[in-house]
Length: 196
Image (cartoon, rainbow, N blue to C red; front, side):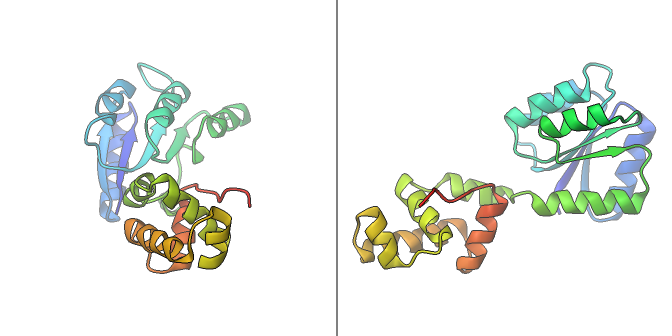
C-alpha cells in the first residue's frame, strides 16, 4: 500500500485521517505546515499520494500544489472546507488529481483515494521507463503502436534481430509480464507512443 502524506494544519483532521487510513492498511505521514512537507519532499520520502488542505498557516494549498507538482510525480488530492468552482478548476489546472470538500464521508474518501492511486504510475515502473536508452524508448514507442519486430526494424532502420534484442531489454527493465502489461504500465506512467 502506498504512503499517504496528509498536509493539514488542523490537528483533529490529521488525527482522524491518520486513524481512518491506518485502519484501512495505509501507512500515513502527517504534516501541520506546507514548509514541513516541502522540507522532506526532496529527501528519501516514500512515494504515495498527498492529501493537501487548501488553508495552511504558511501558504495556500494552490501555491504548495504548484511547488509539489514541479518536484514530485505523486498524485495530489486537494481538500478544502470552503470549496468553490473557481478553486476546483484552478487546483485541477495546477495538477491536482482530485478535489474534495471537507468534511467528506470515510467511504467516499477511501473510494476516491483508491481511484487516484490506481491511476498513478508505480514508482518502480516510472523509474524503469526513465532508465530506458534512447533506442529502447524508440522500440517502446513501436511496441505501443502494435508493430512487429520486422516492422520495428524497418521503421528504425535496424535488423529484426537487433529490434528483438531491444524489445527483450525493454521488457526486462520495465518488469513487464507481457506486451499488454507493458502497454498498460506505460500508459499509466503517462507515456504516449511517438507518431508513426
